[in-house]
Amino acid sequence: MARPRTTQRVNAHSEHVPGAFARWYQQVSRSVENYSLLLFVAVCQAATLLVSWPVWNVRAAPPLLPLIWFPEISFGIPLLLTLLAMVAWPRLGVAAHLTLLGIAMLADQLRLQPQVISLAVLMLGCVNERTAYLARWYLASMWLWAGLHKFLSPEWYGYQSWWFLEQCGFDGDTWHLPFAIAVALFETAVGLLAMFAPRLAVWPAVALHLGLLLLLSPLVRNFNESVWPWNLATAVAAYVLLRQSSVNRLNWKDSGWPTQLVIATLLFSPALFYVGLLNPHLAFVLYSGNMPRAIHISADSYHHLDGWTGLTVPFPDSPRLFIQHFERTAKPGERLHIADPRWGISDRYFIKSATGEAAEVSRAAYLPENGSVRVLELEDLQLLWQLRQAGYRLEPSGFEIITKATYSSPALASQRAEVVMLLTRLHNLQELHLQRQIVTDQDLRQLSVLRRLELVEMNRCQLPENALERLAELRALAWLDLEGSNFSCVGLRQLTARSNLQVLKIAHTNFSDDCAAQVSTDSKLQWLHINDTQVTSAGLLRLPVLPHCQWLSLAGNDIGNAALINLPQWPRLEILDLSRTKLTDDAIPTLSQLQSCQKIFLSGTQISSAGKARLRRALPDLNIDDEPVIEGPPN
Image (cartoon, rainbow, N blue to C red; front, side, top):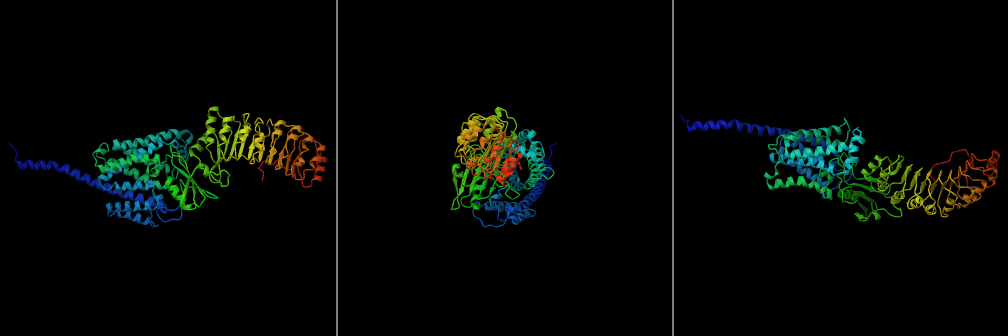
């Protein structure tokens, strides 16, 4: 018997009730879940604002960097009030917060902090299903590009990953490369999973951000506290938003064109970073390095503009913002160097003009030839790391600019050429100390580009025939120490004629009589140290009078009394070392004529106590053998 139609309709309706109730319950549950997530992210945003409080208020330094003119007002408290409003009016509070945050960033671009922007996007993702969908794409793009930037960054495979591990207390030398590859792969994989299998990306994403939070926390490294709330909020948001995904993949094709445009922007705009069109903090460049850096050079100090500038957040490392900061803080004539490691983007140099603008100049104009302005350039952090890994000990000046390099380990020939090339990129290098190295003509020719190199020590090194000729090409060379390194005298006249050279130490070398004759009569040497060489009395007679020389060391040479005949003509001679020579008491009359001499060393000679007494009577202020030879630079 057929059922009545009315009964059939009632039964059909009753069959749909459980499904409708399930959908209603799911919607209510999701609304409660999203509301709870919104409040949690808002609390994390409030914590971030409080940690970086000076950034959001009017301050004296660093200066505000507006994109458009805006009155200098504080945004900290109004931003916190918009977060508080989300408790009662979630959508209105989110809209107000995003609007005010955008205005605050236009008023000061130092507020373009990725953690604050990301938290704002996560709050927007709690409003409805459409914004949640876009927030998932935002997270997917962030993870994908965080990994891709690391793959594309030479610094990440070297200095950056090594430094991160070392700061966290791990062995960077052993693990930096496996760590660098693993992190880049993991972040890229999380991004791809979030696109094509969102629910499978839930726990990897949670692990990624909780792991980073642990490493940055006081439990491990205690660094960059402004991103602690962001990592915690992102871990929770990833769990909620990705788990809510009702499809196996984020299919942008089924969306309308406005949504597709937003997704395309999220996916492809980070690539603009590599052509200098997008700030790295907006391009998901997270801990990978490969970012521009800048140094502002004033008359008596140097200011690094990149990195941490006295606030709890880093400077948005953009050349445009470096220039704007420079124009707001520099005085006319001060200089700015922007070092950019990205492929195809050159370093830039600026001088503040009298009209207040940063005038871009060439490197040659930035580095004056006459040295009238003390100018430095930024070093490549990856380069410094490579040199340290190769065995060099690099020492910074008071402004953390590398000015001294020391190397004493044996180097393979295949490594030497590469390392020398790295050295030539240390533009601020002032001291180079090498021990027991094979130095070739090519090496010295490359070092000639170091325009600030003032001190060179090549002790017990194997040098080429024309070593002195090549060293004479170092324009700033003031101190040369070749102790224990044999060389040819070719180029000695040219070297000693340089106005900058003040100290020449060639002890324990094959310096001979012929070499003595090659010393330039125009020499400005203040200290000549030729201990334990092959020079004889005949050779010293061929040595020209050096009118500027204050310290002369002849210890250990095969010289007698006749070698001293010309010394009374040296007008500024203050310290004379004649120890371990063949001098006798017959040298006392000549030595007594050294009126400017203050210290003389005669130990190991044949001069008697009576002879020394005669010398003291002739020169009452003379100090004989009481103090060791001074090894410092001339005053």
